[in-house]
Image (cartoon, rainbow, N blue to C red):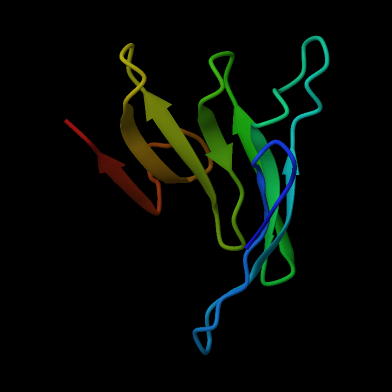
Length: 101
């Protein structure tokens, strides 16, 4: 694993046969109105880039995937409450939905 001077993970290579390497981690720029320099914006897995979307509190609310986007719902205590695979968090016919009570 390789890290930058802020302690952000930059690359991860596995020694396990068939495991997917994670490379090209991209973090926020830290400017006014931007994600902090330690907030992950995207990562490449097996050569495919995946983008993460955050809310105003810095929580991941969406990340794209090769087969479908994933959406995360949060409660007021900043705990994940749902993970939905589909077109949106409110998708009425998602491919999958997990709820954490």
